[in-house]
Amino acid sequence: MMEILTQPLEFTFMQHALAAAIISSVVCALLSCWLVLMGWSLMGEAVAHSILPGIVLAHIFGVPMAVGAFVFGMLAVLLIGGISGGSTLKHDTSIGVVFTSLFALGLVLISRTPSETHLTHILFGNVLGISQADLLQTAGLGLATVAVLLALRRSLVLLAFDKIHAHTIGMSTGALSILLLTLLALTTVTSLQTLGILLVVAMLVVPGATALLLCRRFGPMLVVAAVSAGASAIIGVYASYWFDTSTGGSIVLTQSAQFALAYFFAPAKGMIPRMRRGRRRPVASRPTAQPRRSPLDVKDSA
Image (cartoon, rainbow, N blue to C red):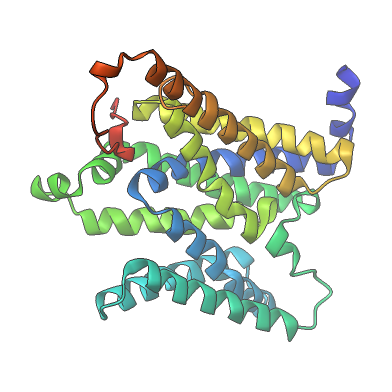
């Protein structure tokens, strides 16, 4: 049994992969709590896909990929806001137009860029190829993101639960929204090599959704999301080593399995416990219509 746990760690690349996967997953999980509560899950997908041309251009001009990814992540946010504010199109339509266009631009640039580097690894992740410098960059960006989230936690929680009240008491909701989108771009860059553009979207949504099913207070929701994502990273990395499967795919599949368990068996919000409570309730006491449950029934513990 111990050999299963220790043998993969005899290789340096596995040590780097495990550390990077844990850091990326936990950072994504913390941010996903806000994205899920604010209904910004689609924005996470948009930013993740829109950074592809920035990565390719950074490779062409010899600058760090993180720089190109961050610039195009923020460009996507500005374009989405500009199109939504300057037209009658709905927000989700603007998101769809911007991120598919930028993603297509990235694919065209990849097809026309002669390179010995496998830029397609950016799409699916290459966690086993992470160097020590990449690991330090991932750790630095991840720690910075977590520090800002925790330092401004109360303000960001109020923004997520009651934006109008936050504006009434004098908080700059626009600045906080921009800050959260900036952190989203940074988090996407952090997780780029671990999960790839296509799979980082899952880690920006699934841990928060899983924790939302299990918790009714925001503080425990953050803890559950982080622990769930960290456990997924460990299980996924080991599974990919022993079963020779995609590391990013194994991590996301593990997280998806946790979501499925929470969806069916969560004590308060799981489907099966809710069905059992419905059967036990006397017919006369059953309400004629169920009130609509808000995803914001999680109370802040701050």
